[in-house]
Image 1 (tube, helix red, strand yellow):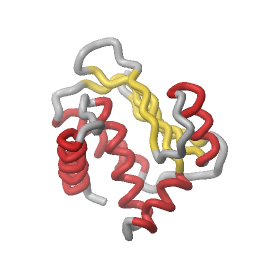
Image 2 (cartoon, one colour):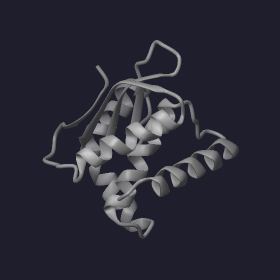
Image 3 (cartoon, one colour):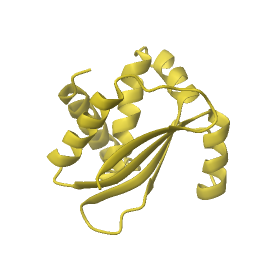
Length: 141
């Protein structure tokens, strides 16, 4: 059964408007002609995400998000997205955005990765940013 779940790992965090966020994510997935199976968001600290980054990706860096694609069927979404609330808060200040806006950007960034968008090259990153902006403009937050 299709589901989007929100969890906390090592901190106390409540996602505001979680139902609205679920509907928004589902609409973006549908708009891209994908089918949602299961999507788990895990909100955590910098240290928790850093440990995952080192353990699973062998990267000794802090990051705001790590996305794991668990899907086995083309155009089907199944994955786990880990988000550092601390890093999102810090980035929001740096980019002069609200925390909520930056959090939604990071959330949809992870979803876009599961939809096949990449951001390794300059061209890919430009398209990713464009898709993030379109998705944020599509939302009703």
